[in-house]
Image 1 (cartoon, rainbow, N blue to C red):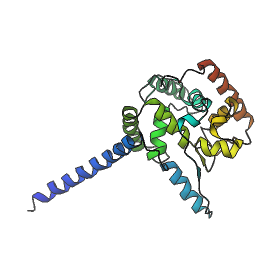
Image 2: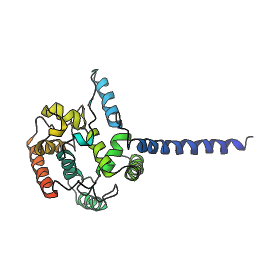
Image 3: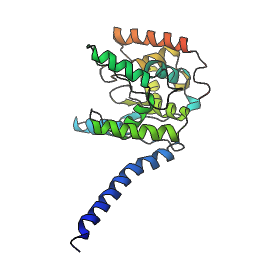
Image 4: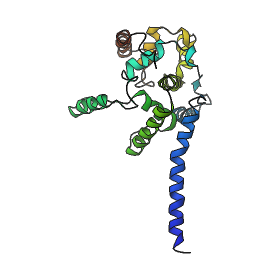
Length: 233
C-alpha cells in the first residue's frame, strides 16, 4: 500500500493538470457561439473598484458583429495587428522586428497579436512571466483552431478595455460618443483604437496630443488597408 501512494498522487496530479488545461479549451469551444459574460481582466478591474471603496460596476455591453460599425474592427487591426487575416495567432515577423528593436535599446516594443490579446484578456492575469506566456500561447492556438477570424475580432472589440472602467465597444460608444456602435465613425473608431496600449493612462473623451496624433496615423493605416480588408474573414 505504501508503494502505491506516490503513484496515486502522481496520477491525481496529472489528472488535475490535464483538467486545468482542458477546461479552458471546452470554454473556448462553447464561446464560438456563446458570448462571454465577462473576462478575467474585467473581473480583476471589478475587484480593484471594490478595493477603492466604490460599489460601481465595470461598464460592459455585448454587441453582435452586425451591429458594430465596420470601422471599429478595422481600426483595431490597423492599430494592433495588421497581419491579423494572414497569421495563425502569432506574427513571427513582428516578433523578429520587436526583438531587434528592443536589442537596440529605447522603448520596449511588443508584438502581441489580437488573438493573443483575446486569450490574455479572457482567461489570464496581467503581468509578465514565462508561465503566463506559456498559457497565453496554448490558449492562442486553441482560439485560432476553434474560432473563425471574424469571431476572434468580434470578441476582441467587445472585451477590449477602452477606459479605466469601460470595456467593449458597446459601453465605449455610449460613454464617449453617445451613440450605438453601428454609428461609430472612422475617426471615433481610430480614437478608440488609439488608447488600447494603455486605456487607463490615455483617454478617448479627452485625448492628449499623442493620442490624437496616433488616431490620425491609425486612420491613415485604415485607408491604406482599405474598407474591404476584413470582408473575407
